Image (cartoon, rainbow over all chains, first blue to last red; front, side, top):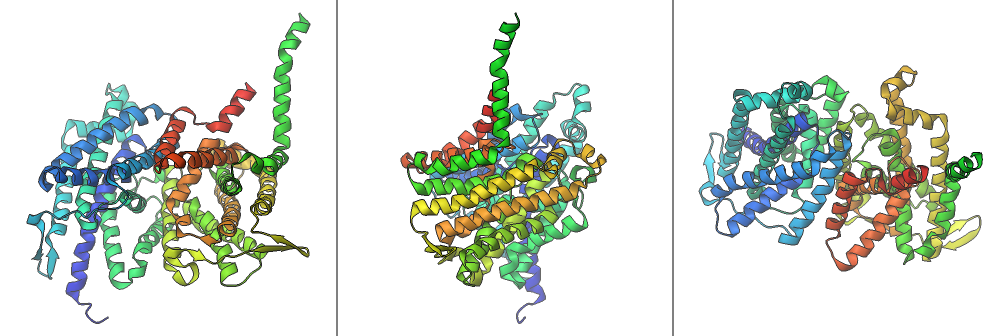
Length: 294
Length: 328
């Protein structure tokens, strides 16, 4: 265990938080969509992947990273709106599995379209120049870009929280998640709310994909892996709970980075072990409503 | 007047009785179709693939179609069957029949392990938890390089001849290979038909239709679900074992979640909760894949689009829609 100082562990903890931040963004969109529409979006990974590729494309035609940060969520969000309106809406009321199956098929189509447009091999994604290098965070030098990821996630979370808790539209969303029928009786066009929630969820997925791109590069299959891991996050945190997604996302990130420090070969398996433990001890997750699960 | 009504009614009853006859002898019909099937296919390897994936989908359909639980982790059951069979031959030098038994046991065991955890959840969670757990199985087999060959897959599953009661059968010959594998698939069809026709089969469907009522009738719903999942694992394990013998290699991709997705597509395309649906789905899917991949490498695009169309417009699948037409 030579060289395993306190500083190293602290640094690894921060790296885990940066990784966890991506999980949080991804899982929040998933959770938001499920909480409102009771649709498990299997294409969420594909939206994430397309977000990264749109960023790549925008930069190649002369845009910069900061433009992407604004443009990517808007474009992916608009795409999400179209998907909800055209493909998912006909399936409401037809059983909970159908939207899931549909989005699964959609993810096939999206991945293949990206393969046609960009090729099967991956691309590196340059970290923007301002965010290259490392800064001293007290326990050692930490890559600036990862700090930026944590910060950007915090900003998105704050904005989302303000939107949900402080605006009247957020109030409708929260009410709709609790009981869509009552909301409809009160004269709210619930289908419009669902449309917008799906758009917001996918926009956040695209944003997460863009943030993840400089960390791991972009390949068409990048969405599939994170989808399985995000399911772990939602099961651990409790489906439909935003707070649960945040806590569990960070926890999963830290667990991954800690096990890759101590037992690298177990890094991928560890989070599934975490999920197994949660399922045995507390099947509804940290913040899940017991009724949803059983 | 009476004559007229009878002449109108007659074809209707004939169809219904035809349907009942087909239902009663469904396994025999499946056997007959499987026996002449390779004659209809452009090449035998495709027919073998259809058999194996059809069996895999048959096992999956027990959980998805009859029990009503959507599993996205069946690749773990299929893959474990393949790996157990391969490991038994490569590392332990077991004869082929013992290796197939090992494959079935592997499927059952993995289904028990995944089932115990996943059955604790319901509905939409079940899909997510099974998918996450099968991803975990993927990484475990990926890491166990000494046993599984890791990234390169498990190589060297060479079964050239099959000894049966003193007979030596040439397993290399594609036609012979087809009929050896067909024998197992047909046996599986008979077992499946028996399970579905048994009182337990009725309980499985009762749990799907109305869980509360099944519980009120005194059935332990959790146990029924677990047992059904484990049985499904046995069928998928057999399919995996046959796949290992057929390919003489177990690629690690067999555990990838796309293999889980594939069987979902096949079952839905064919018709979930129907006896022949999985086989029909496998045949249509694999023939389609073969045809489309001749003129484009992007067959996933076509397949995905067809699947989306199926979910939107034909949720009963090909066979399910045909049955509904025939019954009307």
